[in-house]
Image (tube, rainbow, N blue to C red; front, top):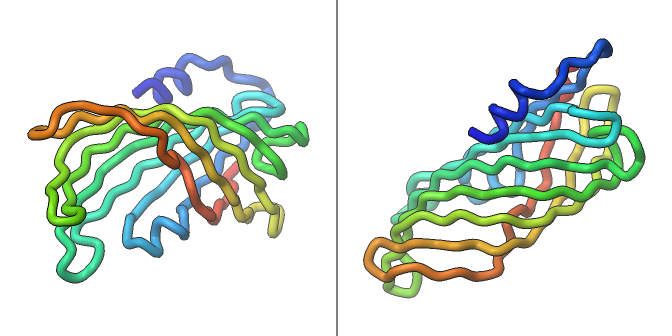
Length: 163
């Protein structure tokens, strides 16, 4: 919701803005379906929003996950969607899974920092390598609340620039 507000309230410049759509292949490998959109907001930065989810991702595994992740990225090279970047992100997740004979069901919210490298393959196609870590706060319905430091972003994404 916050990203949508930022996109609506940001000033429109006279030049064309880049917009890209992507999917994280590493998440797809775990049968977690995802999609993301990234939009330039200055010469060096972008905002993005990704959504992800899975439902019984492996045979005989009782698991469900739904989440969204807004992110702001700063590109060190001076060109958005190219080369090295660092960013800050939020993560909102609702989950239900079993781990070591314990059921975990609840919600989590977190904030983290990310870094990565975008490798341009062509004028419109990129591979985005990224990782991030942050602090997650969770509330499980039967176990209460807590926090932990976890990876908040990890993957290899294939991006297509729409312009």
